Figure 1 (tube, rainbow over the protein chains, first blue to last red):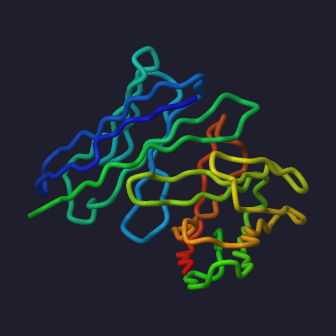
Figure 2 (figure 1 turned 180 degrees about the vertical axis):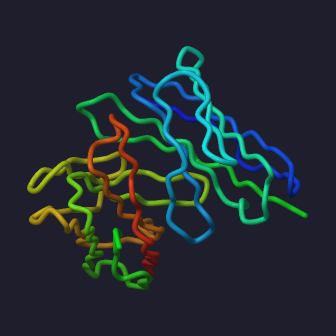
Figure 3 (figure 1 turned 90 degrees about the horizontal axis):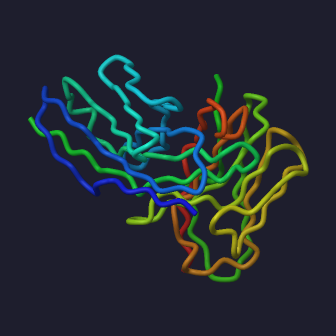
Length: 111
Length: 115
């Protein structure tokens, strides 16, 4: 089975940096996704990590440590529009197609 | 425009009245799946399909059926809806399973209420 843990809610100030952590325990692992979901809308893809290390994409970066079962999403220069839920999802090994999503972290950005 | 569409977007129905939620994608994706999203529980997969006529159960398949007769369409069928199926439903598609670098594209969601 797979178990994914994320904080339920976080708050931060506009212009600041925030780090959203995700830990996982899985019977198999092939990579980790981060998605952003605004209230009432569909999730949209942010990043995918398969190798250890940091992947940077503009204001957003994602880090993975496979040995520790740990990932984080780093958001810099926060904007009000970054207020959303951030979903961590573990990609299963090849042959299976049942991605497991964490329950999501609700990020509130205030002025 | 590449997209996943779902219909209806909102539906209120009564217990036991069969319903179908349609899903269609125009990206020629092989993989499609259905999720439900409930407060505090996150996204949970109901069914998935790896290609035409190939479907399999996800984590919460009870009370649902699917079919994949054409590559672009993947309808979700509730033969006898019950109140515990009140939820927000998302259809998603991707060009490959998530065992590879293949992001999922999600539809806009269908908010279903079963009275």
